[in-house]
Image (cartoon, rainbow, N blue to C red; front, side):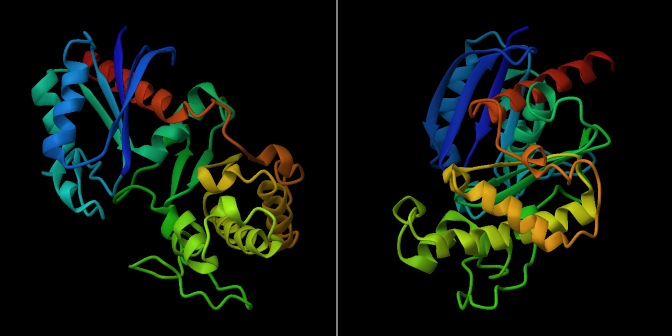
Amino acid sequence: MRLGALEAGGTKMVCAIGNEKGEIFERISVKTETPEKTMKELIRYFKDKDIEALGIGCFGPIDLNRDSETYGYITTTPKLAWVNYNIVGAFQEALNVPVGFDTDVNGSALGEATWGITKGLNSSMYITIGTGVGAGVITNGKLLHGMLHPEGGHLLLSKHPKDSFEGTCPYHKTCLEGLAAGPAIEARWGKGGAELVNQPEVWELEAYYIAQAIVDYIMVLSPQRIILGGGVMHQEHLMPMIREEVSRQLGGYIKTKELSDLEHYLVLPSLNDNQGIMGALKLAWDEHQMLMKG
């Protein structure tokens, strides 16, 4: 089956054609500008591809409540041109195919759970730490939705005793995103992460905050494995520091076989940066199957 996939990010939109096996046949990347400009390009790409369904992993917040009048909308995003934009409706009208919809990071979590390093697990998490921070959660074998969707990047944290930085999040200041995302690194130290590789104090602080969030996720969600992705995690020396700090902050309180082997519990993505697109293909397939079953 030919399926369309869209990884809709705040900076770029990645479009692809693939199938229900997660195979990707082709892809393009389009700069994220206004809906008026960007959507024309996206629809033009998919229009003649003979797809039977489309899956979208989208920046948010988004409305995932199928009973809501604004289901399928991008809602209170900082990308002001996209606020209250009906992205699902626009594609349904233009393409006349089923459209599966979720957050971009839930899409990555789904891709890894279907074909990657969390396949076969009942519960898992995908955390992306880059320009922003997001968390996708699989629980009882399904993507976690509730009142909205997980906004794990905005988990409130306790400041490190030696950190005087106020945080960059305009809503919470000292949430995980405000203290540890890429822009927070640059605002605190005056340089981007790539220029700070050899300054251990930078990464000690990163490990402290990321580990603190992970410990909170473990206590509340009890995932069987956690994946850490995003640009900040491209620093190869950071993961061992995070594992060590998670162990320290857990303090021996929880003893499971998973936590006794943090090298296999806290891991990097396994799908060569295709997890988001592959997750969108799965969203498309699932939506198609749901509608076929009535």
